[in-house]
Image 1: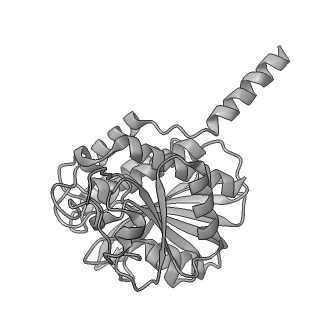
Image 2: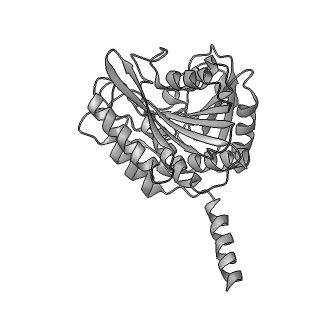
Image 3: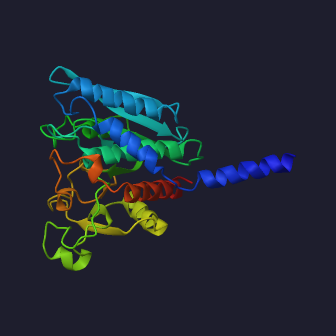
Length: 304
């Protein structure tokens, strides 16, 4: 009897380590985050708070270490939502995505897709034995008018880590991971010549790095590509190239951390970017799930 129980436990542990993101769960989260009475932009504090509470509630299903990081901007209180695993470990990995939108639009790809990835990662990380701490952070105020300011949620978080001398192995920004196209000329680039190397079909996910990316970014890219969950291309360029720092990893770079972005390349592919047409109906849920699976498996490799 004891052997049977042990065998069942080992089988459970084996399958719990296999990535198998639930597409139905993805759709439900996308619906709950994007199909709301008002838009989750910086002016609609009530809607931002509802979204933050939804994220916190779902994080709390899988971790006992969930909290808001609150801060004030022009007399208004905004919230990052933080969920941690492996809290007994000193060194940590930050995986972040922003939940606010630009203006009056649903922001399904930008960036509900990234937030849903965090929620699915929380489910997969629950109960795993980790040798590094993983903090999943849902940021507020990534979008204009606060982009590139000290009011970005990711700036607040990165500064906190620095001020408290917290050991950070690296940071991954999950920024728009849901839009794919197999059509010719569906992919553009900041430099036209890049299509010779990367092709003109938007059918892959991109690992974006700057030169001198650091140990975490190198190792994550290697582990993600080795999983072979989805067609993947790596893009490394000078920080000054347009688009390479257009997300929350920017602030971790500025504080000296090894950080990178995983993305469907945003407006270089998805023409719904910052438009009312950025809805969940335009997303490729199956390929989005494969991206999340790849992130999860790469994180396991880096923390076990």
